[in-house]
Amino acid sequence: MWKYDGWESDFKLGIVTPHADIGPEAEAQAMLAGTRSTIHGARVDFSPMHPGGTIDEKIAHDPVMQFIAPEIIDRTVDSLSSSPLDAIGLAFTSSSFKIGADREQELLMRLSTVSHGIKLDTTGTAATAAIRKLGLNKIAIMAPSWFDDELCRAGEAYFRDHGIDIVSATPSGPTGGPLTITPAATAAAVDELVATTGAQAVFIAGNGQRAIGAIDHLESTLGITMLTANQVLLWASLDGSGLRSQVEGYGRLFSER
Image (cartoon, rainbow, N blue to C red; front, side, top):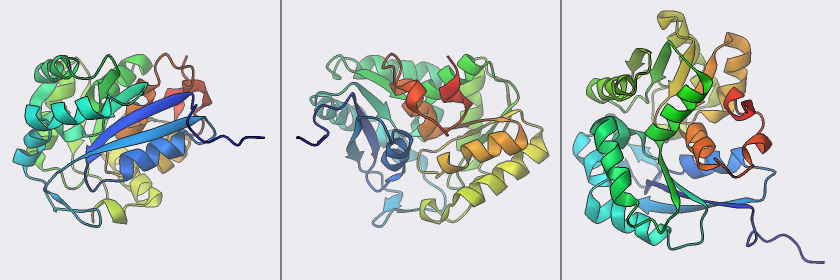
């Protein structure tokens, strides 16, 4: 008699994202289609983004650090985790890159004191776990065009500090901002990146960089492994839920047992 209304979903995922970024929630919702899951967002002001979802040509670094300042991110996580959630993902790759592996662990330890016992992942920790799970080497990082070279170098250092083999880290994603990116443009950029670097795997960094729609196509045509910011964040968030196997069409990551 009664229709499913979402209240008794099997998995409730909280996502913390920049205030004008719809990508993390949209991509998580797409990947979870067909499951009884719900997405619950919390938004943090990020000055390089503007009404309508546009972003500066290159993002400044000070706002990246401000995003994870205690008076901002701690309050946001405390508020979001007051809801009956199963996991929370911080959908903000640049903060992982900017502060590095050691300081990120300090951030997670601090946030664990305000997250009410709810599992918490960053995009960086999720990507690291996915790379180790799949045993990947010769990885190229395709950062969004709005990352500068310094932030890309920080991303390379972040993964190398985890002992991960990085062959390239460049702002080689499609240009024009989040709203202009298409799966076709993403695929073309990855194709060029693999041709020039010889990468065996590509991590598309930046949670605002549209990417998941091209994963299966690229894995099947190029014979590489694809990881993307929102894909790995969802994968890590679903750990222990039994739902990973229900995510189909978004890369070999979800098919690994």
